[in-house]
Image (cartoon, rainbow, N blue to C red; front, side):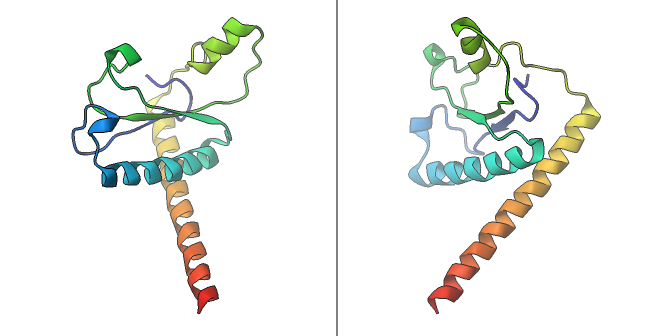
Length: 133
């Protein structure tokens, strides 16, 4: 279940139980995917703060034995006290149900923002190449 509106799971196609089981190339690719998806998600949801979480092993709260990352948007929440802050950090009290239509709409916005982020990066790269000619 999502912890907040826009909560994404990012998983490699190859089965890797833990982060240390990934190859160097897979790790580099995953890091880039996390960066692009984080930017796109922030744009699509309008939430500029988020967590990226990845657990390794049962003692670290890994429930699914397949490496995966959570990108969790964190809208501003007015909480008071240390306990409230701890619960907020782990998403307790933030979860709302998401209907299928809303999920499809949000997924479409995220896809569109991914395309925009990648297009902007391509333009930046072209600009740097042209500046060096």
